[in-house]
Amino acid sequence: MTERTALLRCLVIGDIIGKPGRLAVVGHLAEMRAELDLDLVIANGENLAAGAGLTPSLAEELFANGVDVITSGNHIWDKREIYDYLDSGRPVLRPLNYPDDAPGRGWLLHTLPDGDRVAVVNVMGRVFMNQLDSPFAAMDSLLDEAAEPLPALRIVDFHCEITSEKNAMGWYLDGRVTAVVGTHTHVPTADARLLPKGTAYISDIGMTGPRDSVIGFSLETVLPRFLTHLPTRFAVADGPVSFNGVLIEAERGSGRATSITQLQRLIEV
Image (cartoon, rainbow, N blue to C red; front, side):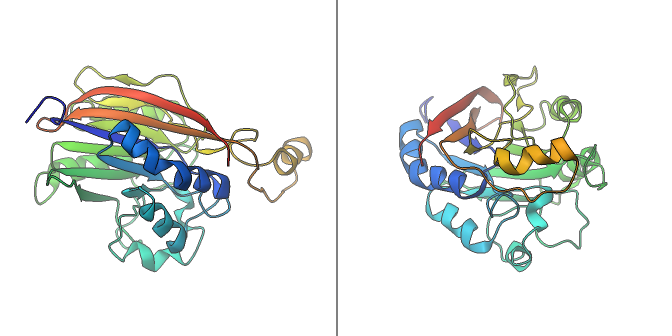
């Protein structure tokens, strides 16, 4: 095996927002897979359905256009039709630390074309979010108590509100997983780095959604809430899409990350 093929190349796409984000991914991901020589593409899809939730048809459209695994977060429950789909075996995850009797699963094994396997995990923070079981304990249980050891390659989407909780998870899992990448806040952070024991980390990948917006939603529907404190119905904005992702390279044998690079592109849709 050459040095080049000994590395996994994985793209993780930040929260895809509504139709504009979906069109950007569907229209450009195949080209990106070839350009970046990707082995695996993971995308957070909890905001695909008009900005809140996911439907089976939208998930299948992503799979048909180059996404391998879809992660999510607190908005995964916003569309009732996704519940049965989560139990269908398709590669869509809900956070690991939801109760066991919630639909779906919080992690899966993805098999690459050459037979190598990657564990993809979705877990959610608790500060300013749903009061779920501890994400730290949930990760301990998965990593230390699984019936069979997980493969060395382990990618974690930590869907979380505050950077301190994300920082803590990155350090807690350093050397135990390949990458901890943050989602949920829709704003990319500038702290992509390799932690000392070989885990790639970023606090938030950022969104794949309309650039001229408030975290993907139109100014006309968001600003009144700040100005009047009255409830408004948010609508996904229009215009060019800010495509945000991170490209992670990792040693296939050890699972140790060797690089993490932010990918930020402006896409007309």
